[in-house]
Length: 342
Image (cartoon, rainbow, N blue to C red):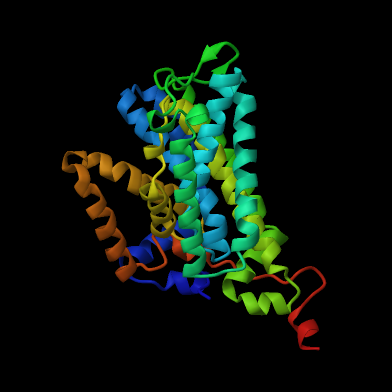
C-alpha cells in the first residue's frame, strides 16, 4: 500500500502534481468551492452554465458509484438504471400528482434506493464480471419497462414540459443560476455524506472487503451486509441526481439513460481515481467538458473517451488522483494486530 512517503518520491509531472496536492490539498479544495460559487456572477453564457451544471450532475453520480466500485471493489454497469428510476419517479410525481419538487426529490432517491437494495441482496453474492453482467441486465430491464409502460412513463415519447424547481416562489433556472446552485448544494451534501461514511467504521469495512474479502470475513466483517449497503447508497445517490436531472432538462425519455450513460459514469470513476472523492470532480470535469470542446466531431467523441482511458491505464492505472485512495485499514476500536495474532 502506497503511503505519503512513497507518493512524494514519484517523479515527473504526476510526482509534482501529487506533491502539490499533498501540501496544498485543503487550500485547493477551498479555492475550488469559492470559484464554483462566484462563477455565475462572472457573466458566463447559459451554455457554459449548463456544462458546469452537467459536470456536477455526473460528479454526483460518480460519487455514488465510487462507494461500491472504488471503496468496496464491486464493479457495477447499471447505475444508469437508478439514474433513470430517480428521474422518472420525480418527473411522474410532479407532473401527474402535482407534488412539490423538494418533496418528490427524496421520494426519487428512496425508490431508487429500494430498487438498489432489491437488486443488491441476491446479486452481490456474485463477484467480478458476473456482478457486472447482472447489473448490465438490470439496466436493460429498467429501460425496457420505461419504454413500454406508456400509461406512466409515456413510453418512447418520454415526459415533456417537466416544471422547473421553485423555491420561495422563484423559479430556478439556468438563466438565474438557480439550478446551478441547487445541484451544487446536492453535490456538497452528497460529498459530505460520502466523506462521513468513508471515514467511519462502515468505510473501513468497505475498504477491508476491497482489499481482501476472505480476510475481512475471517475478521468478522459481514461482507454481504456491507456490499449491499454500498450498493444501496449508490442507488440512492443516483436517484437523487436523476430527480434533479429530470427537472433541469425538462424532458426525459428512455434514450437519456442508456448503456453509454453507465459507461460514462464508470469512466469518470476510473479516470478520476477509484476510491478517492476529489478524483470524481476531476474525472467529471474532464469527461463531460472535454467532449463539448470536441462537439464538432459528433459521434467520434467516444473514440476519445476510449483513447483517454487506454492512455490512462497504460501510464496511470490508478487514475489521475488515485494516489489519494490509499487509506490504510484501521482495526475496530479495541482490536489490534497483537489481539488477532493471540
